[in-house]
Image (cartoon, rainbow, N blue to C red):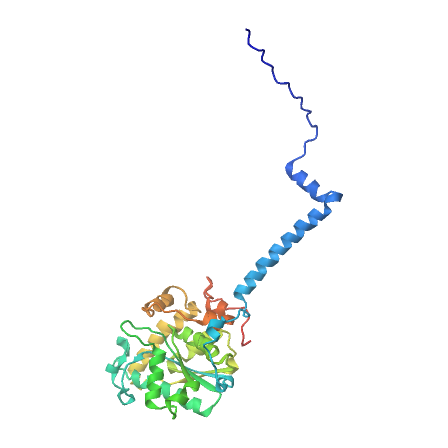
Length: 328
């Protein structure tokens, strides 16, 4: 038998369109056609909704209205005293006290000191800062003393702030019992330099009282007055008329004082004029060296209004933070 004939498929004749329509044009025609107006509206509304959602998500992440988790609030009980506090008395710390009794406060072996702090009369200045802060608080029942300084030394388990508070209690500088002093003095345990002493103490004040202070008094070295009043205060845009500074320097001789002032100028004031927030090169390196225990603060949670300021580190190192702040 002969094989069945192979049937060839019919040729399909395609009509060449003399005016081809591009895919993009087809979509546009689809959206703009009279019967499809609702499609265009739908896509426009969807686009606007997406943009709105993105902005709202960003707002939720950065806004001050982000609530503190209930798991944290359930462990916090602020007394009536905290509600009336409005004056932050900041005592920046410079070393760690380890002694068992305030009677030994001038014994340098009971302090963890840097080499340049030894045999310089500085430990007496440290105690004078503590004493003056306490004296100011006794005159103002609306004040809270914050001893500020982190766990800056290797081989220790206590922060600078905690050690100053411990010495203050041992010396009874608040003229009261241990149980009743707590509402009027506390420690700030994360600051690694003078700028953080100021900013973190404001955050700690809020964490402790539930509000931000109305005024600030800093008790520190006289030689650091300009650093705090001209640079750090302006960096956080704190009002000048609500900021005071009390300076107490070591009782050194003229030569030692001149060396200390020059050291402050070269290692403190001038670097901060070039790096206002202390987050680049030289000043950042100091922070890294002063954080051997890898500690980091809780203020993103307890003071969320300050989150953007806490993170502020402009490439243009003298650009001030220009966003909303709770004290302005």
